[in-house]
Image 1 (cartoon, rainbow, N blue to C red):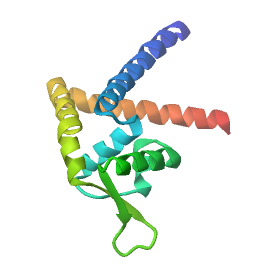
Image 2: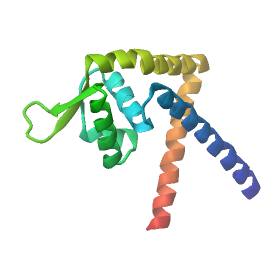
Image 3: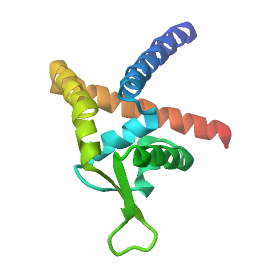
Image 4: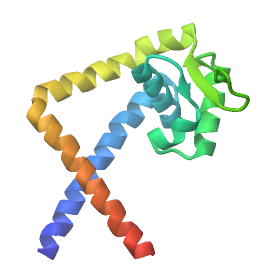
Length: 149
């Protein structure tokens, strides 16, 4: 079984890397870093302003990486970072008109492609994929945490 699990792990990790490569290439073609692309993706999915503090956790990037990406996006005029209504320190991120047009060219087509791929799989297989990935990641995190502890 040990040999079988080694082969399975190699296959699984190659698929993860293939997925990473696809999204990295999409981000590169759009002229953005991976993190900046995922911020724009998150804004499109939210269809409105997003709390800045949620970005790191939602997209699994460090706060420093998110802050750097936000600065890049602001300099390009794609987003605005402003104080949340009624707050003195919590900030929200929102698309500018330029950012929305950018998303029309680079982000929304990716979402459409993802939806088409999932629909082509069929609802049952797509749900099984998501559930299985979630279960695997939960178990992996648990085992890694136990070995650290």
